[in-house]
Length: 455
Ligand code: 5AD
Ligand code: SF4
Image 1 (cartoon, rainbow, N blue to C red):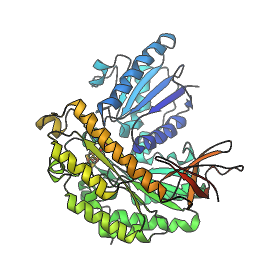
Image 2 (cartoon, protein in one colour; image 1 turned 90 degrees about the vertical axis):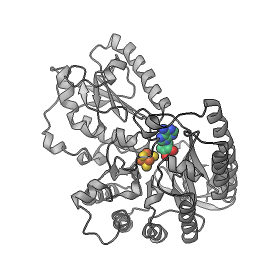
Image 3 (cartoon, rainbow, N blue to C red; image 1 turned 135 degrees about the horizontal axis):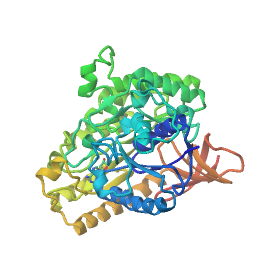
């Protein structure tokens, strides 16, 4: 029987795609291998968000070249954000990737996953792969990951849309994943219903701009959501909330865009049983001029208003964000504004990245990547120092408090999980608590983690 190995890079969306891919490969009769050496099919599910992420894949491909010497039939596939068009080494529409990656056999856009079997056959006509009718795989979202490979029964990521229409000038996603398309409502509800039947208690909805669910140009043209009274995303949250009667306890979503953080949505977050006091809301910069160059389509004042509404309606809500430092033309003053804004908003956590130019984006075509690497690094460290201070003081508020932790891993007595506020909590337990939500009293709040004991 043929074997496969998948290495995943990047965001939650890629991990969710990997689950779908595993379900597909297992349906084709492949079995999973825990390491690439000796596997018949090796797949890299890649990320393009920064150059560093791509460099890691190039490094791994060179290693695969070595493995191929002893296992010449090994097929190396790259999918995910680094691929623009699906093709195999032998097909006429060979992807540009093949000239830069000698070890590569197949390049595949993730939504063209159903073509993988045909591409494998094209290279290795002898490969024993059953024929799966293409029409049953028409939409890659229809490949249901539930039955094969969700990591833990208690938690699941559910993709609700793919692609992005926002075109931030620095970002490759609208080009790598294409325009935004939402999944059908019934399909999502069915998937979650099945998950809940299997014991799932926590669902994280994912999408590039998750809260614009049903609002994209494509969705509007298709008129699939026109009959709803509320915004499609709010409607979806309300429908999911009904599963609380069947055992669903928590619904998270990531990442929303500030432009679509409506009052309706804030109200739903404040009132639904399954919603939690946590939001990750990328701001990218604390300066209006930078935001304009980034094409973020909101101002700092508008962002602030959203946060104050959230804090008023959901007391104690934890807010985290994404920031890019060293974007094209970012002056010292603009960066200082970001620092001030970060302090003022009291972000408790953040993914801070140094701007990395991506070929094909508006910024790469029309702006100058004129901030030196050393200045980017200095700005990153300044912001990171502030983040550490914010994170510690947010954590100290939990001293001696009891939080409810969804246990994500347990190794003997050592347990790790997430609280309502999405804080990482570490504690010991003599009994099996994996996949359960348990009360933990915080005894030692640290910079990045809360340490506690079972309450
Ligand atoms: N350079 C640096 N960071 C980027 N991000 C997106 N594109 C780039 C880029 N070209 C960051 C943004 C986004 C997160 C997923 O990655 O902060 O929110
Ligand atoms: Fe990229 Fe902007 Fe879309 Fe996020 S909203 S995926 S940063 S283009």
